[in-house]
Length: 374
Image (cartoon, rainbow, N blue to C red):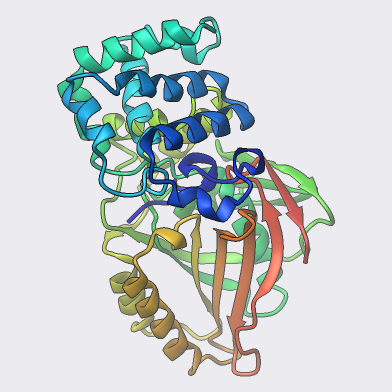
């Protein structure tokens, strides 16, 4: 699965200044144009060091390194495939692993000369060619815990309308960070939820009214991914950190907190694609007095069309038998492909309610703020 970690902030979207038509951004075919676009977006998103490293990829165009040849011979849509951020993850990993820390000065803002960054990135790619090449094999997986603030607010809203005991099912779970949201402490506009002693404390800037004062209970929560990341594995956790822009220190801390909780009790993640997982999960008996919730964040657009169709079909079939005692809900925090806003939308079925979409909130892609609209 393309993982919870994909979003416009890290997959080449969300910057109006960078493109007059944000919907066309993902269709950029020119590799130099895509690299330059991604670099400008990093700057606009407050990551100037990362912007310099991404822009330095342009200096690889005539390099004979296998990594450089693969970048400039890329078959596909460069931004949709998150190509610049795949290799940036590998370069950042050199710093985090301690293998070569010279880029730390660029990421940290001590080096501001683009020519210097260009030369350094070229040298690193040619020196560590074999090590960096596999980073191009798959998209970034940042799996951001900050998004769970919106998802938890959505549960507070649902708890007013359906059974407040929830069986949670996530697709595109990556490392399962958001499947541990029942163990996080949230401050959602003054509305607090979760264990006060949790090492994961999430309190985004809140705009608008607080969500409803309800008491949702998550009785089970599990997810799926075609390539799950094991948070308890130190190297895998470091890989997750490598995809986070170095300027985002708070996000780094959240991965550490999630790993601490995973070491206590690992998240329940099945190695399945979205269609297989949802079809299987919805086929199991649902307990009376429990709402079954499918949820996901910044992943739907990367699920293949045929799998989307299968998920929708499975949900429609399950919705037909939903009742007040066994409701069904669908909670998503996804990118509006026309506006590039990240929108929290809820749907639910209980025999009377027929799954009408409700726009609950707009949110920062990494959870820095939430604007409650419901």
